[in-house]
Amino acid sequence: MAEVPCEEGGDSAAVMELLQQRAEGRTNFSLRCTNDRKVTIAVTVLAVVLLLTVAILTLAAKKHPPCSAPTLPSCLESGIGFGNKCFYFLEEEVDWEGSQHSCLSRQAHLATIDTREELRFLLRYGNFMEFWVGLWREGSGPWKWLNGSLFNALFDIQGNGHCAYTNSHRISSDRCSEMKFSICSHLQRHPSEVQKDTEILNST
Image (cartoon, rainbow, N blue to C red; front, top):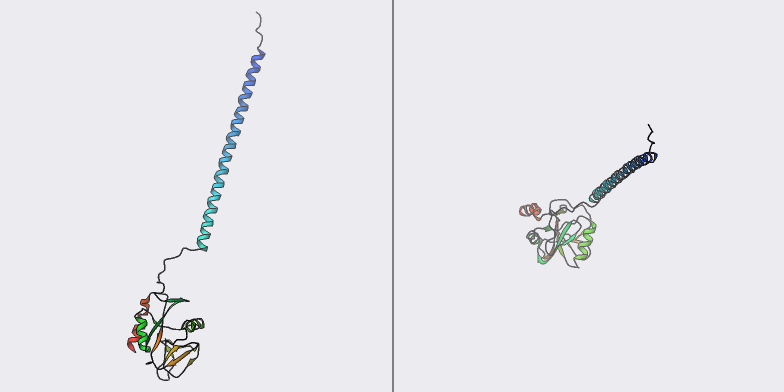
């Protein structure tokens, strides 16, 4: 019986097809790996950007904290803010006791002067007029502020009177019954804090 010769061409085609399939498999695997790698890199970059954004916002919030709602009112009408106080220059002539009442009716008290800067401001703004301030003494006793604290000799007080006032360039004293304008003040806090000054006034 005659042998059937092997179809070498058919075997070669089959081998080539097999090799092509394997090559395509490797290519597909390579593409899948490449795509997975790209996705991983994109996710990593996005995470880093988000972290940096959060860090920047956190630092900005610490550097510029949000403004809290003010618990204290601003100066009332006609008031002038200087430092941590509001000052009111009342051009209504009254005696020293009357000036206290005028200030209290405006939810303030006769001005105290705590620094040389405040003194310069009051003398400059007083415009050469005489204004009562909250400094007084009994007889030859020590000078005291209306709130009861002792005067610390921050400035000289001219004259022999018992109630102090400002003029163009210094603090002077006069009889408390004299008629002058008034300088009122309160810390930039709720004016109800002057209640203790009302109690001091009623006790004098």
